[in-house]
Structure formats: C-alpha cells, structure tokens
Image (cartoon, rainbow, N blue to C red):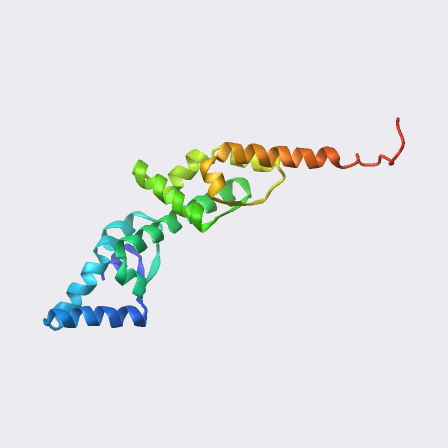
Length: 178
C-alpha cells in the first residue's frame, strides 16, 4: 500500500515469497513475522524510490538476500535510463551503458552524494556536439569512456575525420588531378 501511494507497482517473485516465508517462520510470530520480514527487506525501497523515476519493480530472491545492493542497482538503472532518454530527446542520439560503466557511475555518484544522471551530465557535457561531429546517432558508454570521457570523445572525433579524409571527394576520379 505504501508504494501505491507513490504510483509504484510492486510484484513478488515466487522464490522471494518462499524466502520471506522461511524468514518469518524462524521468528515464530505468525503473520507478524511475515510483515516484519517484508518490512526489513523493503524499508530502504520505501524511503528511496519515491524520489526517483522507478514506477515498478519486482521483489526477487536477490532483493531479499541483498536489499541495499539491489536497491542501488535499481536506482542506478533508473537514473541512467532517465539520462539516456533526456539525451535522446535533446540530441537524437541513443546512449547505452555497459554493466561496468553503470557500476563505476554508481560509485562516482555515491562518492559525490548525487544521482548517476548528474555524474553523466558532468562527464558527458560535450558528447552531444562531439557525437554529432563524429556522425554517431548511437553510442555505448563503456568503462573507458567513464574513466576518460574527453580522451574517448577526442578519439571518436579524430577517427571520424580521419576516415572522411581517406574517402575520395564526391565526383573526383581516381588518378586524375585538377
């Protein structure tokens, strides 16, 4: 009920329910034990999710076993998806993130106490223009890009111009000079 108040749908996987029931049985308090087991797992989600763009999630066995880690992953994915959608809308470039890049962005965000999207905004501020220069309408952000964003962007632009310089000029005939 708490999640619905914020427009967030929650589903439970069967394996998560089984694990929660096992934990509740260990408490020997009946239904109160089940409520307690669920609350322990979801408390962090209840506090954090209303402030991010997550509209639904599934409680899996992994969530029950590692609620904090799974919450961080869910928030990171939502934040990166939000950044990618805004970038696509503004610049008509589709961005994706490798798992390693997402993990590093999450760590950088945690260090700065901000969302991963804010870290992306800072690191990739020049990417709209640079990717346009490079003729790219899709780009996968990998760990190298996160660690050295300007170096990677420079490499992309140089490679694009290098390949353009090697193409014969339109209408030019091979072996002739003006």
